[in-house]
Image 1 (tube, rainbow, N blue to C red):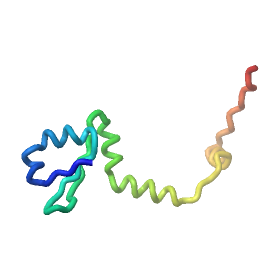
Image 2: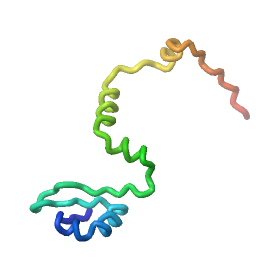
Image 3: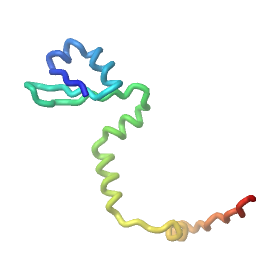
Image 4: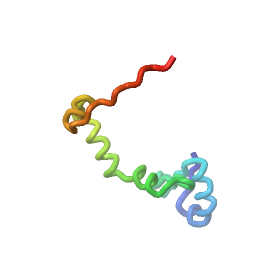
Length: 90
C-alpha cells in the first residue's frame, strides 16, 4: 500500500490514479490518513456504485439478520411445484 500526502497528490494526481489501479493509495493530511484512492478501471459503473454505497451494504447487513425460510416453503407461497429431476445417466 502506497502513502502520499495531500500536497504531493495535487502535484501527481495522474501517477496516483495509475498506481491505484494496482494497489490502494492512502492519502494523508498532517501525517494522518484522510482518504484512500482505489482503482476501478475496467469495472462497470453499477459494480462501483454498489461496492461503495453504504446504504446498500447496510441493507445487506440487515437482511442477513432476518429469519429465512426453506425452498419448499417459498415454493408453497409462490404456488410453484418443484421441478422433477431427470434420472442420472450412466
